[in-house]
Image (cartoon, rainbow, N blue to C red):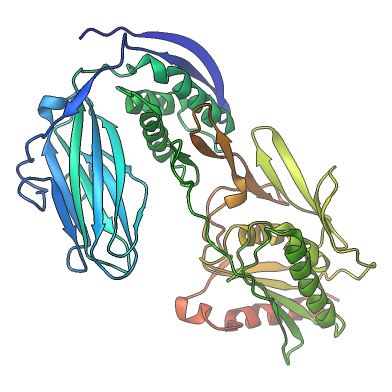
Length: 474
């Protein structure tokens, strides 16, 4: 079969630079495909099974590899159907990974992560992987891992290969509009600057080579996200379920008045999907802070180590007397910067109506020392609240890095064929202008054993030093 290729220029913004993106047009017709069984690869790393068509996962072998010799299939597209059976009494989750030219040390020339595959007890689930084999590929493998709690899982593989070879950038004409739409949506929205936009575009062209349908486009976009270190975006083919969101159970905040005159407020998870519940939680948080404030504490500890939520606005409104606003942070995107305004029980975007309004009477602001406790369970809205405290005078962060899950920054786009593309379009910036693209780091890292304390001793010591310093300066 002969193929032809034509490219049409289309410029898209990517990061701070303009990325010349070619709109995709391609092969003369969709290439047929057929079942194929490449030979098992020889040498290391070896397949778990001799025929390289199955693996068995359990506590003794939580990771296994099926690896094939594909030197005869270079420049072909390969589709791999996974059928995983959970033989245990508890739910299991299998994590597949496609690897090209895997090495014995675990590295590979290309490693593309699949989508976590949940499997009910004594049930089975399937997933289809798709990959293009470059002209220098020698082996193709699927490395599978079963996540804890580990259940015995049997996995089998069925392969199909395109009958035609494809140059980089060639694929079925029917997918060209969808691929162009996906590329435009992603490159125009992704908030993080690309160090090499041209290389990112070329990666997408390579991964899309031989694509026939929307599922192939999804796999190309997933590979692009991985290549540009985007751990937050997602691509889901039409008819597939979106990534599961963490189910939050609201837990009331806790308050403590310490003998040394320090007030402590601890925020936990909150489900803010209903306005009534979000306002009730924010009211409880504010009232507890106001009750502690009536005793005129010398300092505050704001414990965010267990704070998670879909929206930061209820917490920001309730914490307004401690945040020293009104401008406490911002959301940044390709379109610019939107300031977070927090004042007297109201939280909003600058120039916009209130998102949360607790309808409070004027109350005094606290300007003294505040220690903020953070850790790996500080997620989503918890990280937004953390950023809102960053840059506040007389404030210090203690603990461990946050989770790094900017859930609120991911915007979901539904493409013309039903594909869902989640694009990280916004990041948090603190009041000093620093944009936070990685988990928020504490100013003082606490050892694990110390960080478990309700109020760790280094926090108490820092507050004492701050108070002594302020007394000495009078």
